[in-house]
Amino acid sequence: MGSVSLKVGDGTARFKRASVCSSAVNLLMLFSVIITNIFAFYAFTYHPTKLHHNHNPKNIALISEKVSLILREIDSSQKKLAQMEKEILGYESIDLSRPNIANELKEFLAHHELPLGKDSRTGITEMMASVGHSCEKSMDLLSQYMSYKVNGPCPDDWILGQKLILRGCEPLPRRRCFSKTIPKVDLQPFPVSIWKNVSEKSFSWSGLGCKNLACLNSKKLNKDCTGCFNIVNGYETQIYVKVKGKNDFLIDDVLAMGNGGIRVGFDMGGGSGTFAARMAERNVTVVTATLNADAPFNEFIAARGLFPLYLSLDHRFPFYDNVFDLVHVANGLDVGGRPEKMEFLMFDIDRILRAGGLFWVDNFHCYNDEKKRALTRLIERFGYKKLKWVVGEIINSSGKSEVYLSAVLQKPVRV
Ligand SMILES: *[C@@H]1O[C@H](CO)[C@@H](O)[C@H](O)[C@H]1NC(C)=O
Ligand SMILES: *[C@@H]1O[C@H](CO)[C@@H](O)[C@H](O)[C@H]1NC(C)=O
Ligand SMILES: *[C@@H]1O[C@H](CO)[C@@H](O)[C@H](O)[C@H]1NC(C)=O
Image (tube, rainbow, N blue to C red):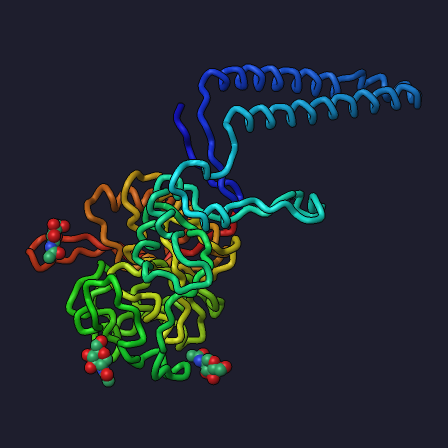
């Protein structure tokens, strides 16, 4: 018998597969659909013409009684069905009975009944801890992560936490230990802070290959960060305000396309936060989502007085629908894997962007023509207005041609 994990609401569920029973459910579902339809047909065709000729209140009362009977029947069979499904799937939380599970994990995941019973507003009866469903796949690592002294210092293990996140164990469980503090020296007031170095001692270097900024700057950390920690005299000081090629758009040009309505934005995988920095100078608040892949991105962004969001791009964005005026992405859009993966991401971007808001695809590297066409088709399906669309070719240092797409797209109003 296999077992699948699934995240339900803010809790965790484990589902056991039971193939024999599922055909029974299918049959029952079919049956209930047929019955429901017959009832509905009966309800809506019940001597409707007679109603007009014969305004007998007795008849009307009889009909409404029948209708409510039918509705009750439908409701109860739907409830029965849901209950059966739940039983067959074996809905339960992460299996905490297996050996070697850290006590703190059990403690964190324990359900807590609401002291006053069912909450009338939300309908919930117990509080559940929020933890990613894929944690189930990495229970050894998770248990290691949850092994610490309560009220003591947390182990220096952020690398372990990030490893779990990258395996889909997101969100991580909360812990009851004190994380290491790092004195933040020479922080500058905002907005001076945006372009000022702070002491390298302000960042945690544990577990990283580089131990200083000079080392980070000598590396290509990812496609959107080469020397991106040099905010004093590197290329980072020019990006978005000077163009290098036709795929680069000026931040002021893009803002102008928003007709002054760009106030809050979201940058996915935004390196050291320079996009948010340039936006902050224009009084636009941008949240920068980034993990700490090989560099202290989050701390660095925060030291600049900007808003870092420690989140993998596989996570549903923790924002409500239609809240952002602008979403900016460079190569963070390249989620790899099956095309459905990018679709899920695109739909989530679309969800958080308001109608009339701008989606800025910035120097997205299309590894091949097929990828470019797939992305183009996907974008076109969303019906965005192409305010800017530039496909550029760059001959890279090994003499090979690389195709880049830059675009500014406006989300339509959908009815
Ligand atoms: C700021 O940091 C960069 C490395 O990122 C370094 O090259 C530069 O000298 C530093 N500038 C100051 C004023 O400390
Ligand atoms: C940003 O806001 C400040 C304070 O309201 C204002 O003085 C400044 O001119 C604004 N800057 C821009 C670029 O709009
Ligand atoms: C140049 O582009 C080719 C083809 O996309 C790629 O395989 C190669 O790694 C690139 N070289 C560099 C230095 O980026």
